[in-house]
Image (cartoon, rainbow, N blue to C red):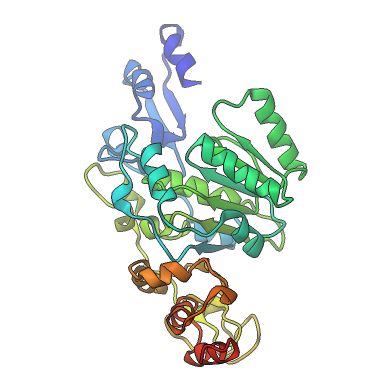
Length: 376
């Protein structure tokens, strides 16, 4: 432990080489005390996320960066699982989010943002998108974690909440039961980001926003441990996707280690893959997956066009080409009102039109349903 080393730093023989794991933490005072004690040592920083929250970056202590293989390359070689990414069509007001001393959002502001806006019900969306999968939920407070775990358990889905106040014995027991698949859902507060082995996680649920690119990547990639035939699921209830893009987007890490003001999305080097939406089965797939002009899911003819929200419920799969449409949805009060409703709860033409627009249905759908319900 770094804290142990700092307490006994005078007893440590002078090293020629210092290797720092989780190197993005190396600007912390405890790390700096060790590094400054041995100024002639060569320092190697190892990290999967060489970017910090705030202006001060790793160029303060690093002369250069050697970039390893990208997430795409590791996925292609079978070291990481492919994934599908889902996010709510509605957003919370970013003005409610305030940063604290760590550079990330404060718990108080996250609670305000999450509690005053409409989000897809976490259990409902898990059952629809990732039913039966082993999932880790990341949230912002003990109260919210307990509530989420209780909601899963009330639906007959085994869940346990763990946080910084949980005893080591209880935490180890929860992790062991999760690994043994005796527990489906592990809800945590600021625990399972670094240094934990959870190979059977197939789904990650983000129930909190973050301002940290490193934390976002640690959240989202927790479910990418590979297994034959596996496609991981990422469910983002806080629209972190809008801030950071996809976890496997290529990023300019050489730029990332430079100090100064820079937005996380400015580090992206690729505008994104072309997306194709099937008009028959509403599957959203990469254009590269389309062969002979046919949908890889249903086999029907498919045309390339900008992707639309196509799900028949309130959580839709995020695609790069659809960000402008999602932005429009956020600013439509009527669309927000119908986002969490079923068709049976819609009673006016305007509600049906909004619901149809939200889910990408054809124009004739509204007329057909309105006639069936006796509205017209």
